Length: 137
Image 1 (cartoon, rainbow, N blue to C red):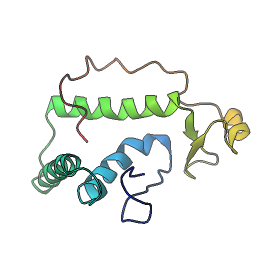
Image 2: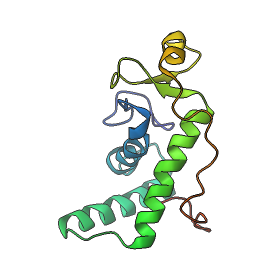
Image 3: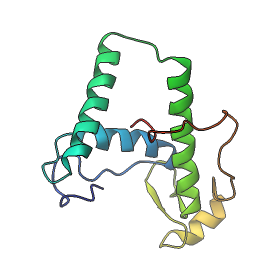
């Protein structure tokens, strides 16, 4: 959900089917909403516009990501899954009906189905995280 504007604006609120989609939905929010949100700070809009234009250009040219870009993308996806688990965000049951908090209405069903990422440690299999700029959206 966009923290700058009210729900109801195009792509300001998205509902992922499961926790594996969180990173994809964050990129969608960045590309389709934050890049044009008139309430978001100018610096945020400009950064999101640049990233969206780059992804669109890469898609149109069918450019394959470099090894570093691919590693950074995997790290971003892993980080989103880790953060979801650390705040208690889990897949609701039955599958693909959305996400919810472990202690919410669906808490007992979550326990019965098992917790997917709550006990994971931060991802470290893909080498050190890039320094400097935050993850590419």
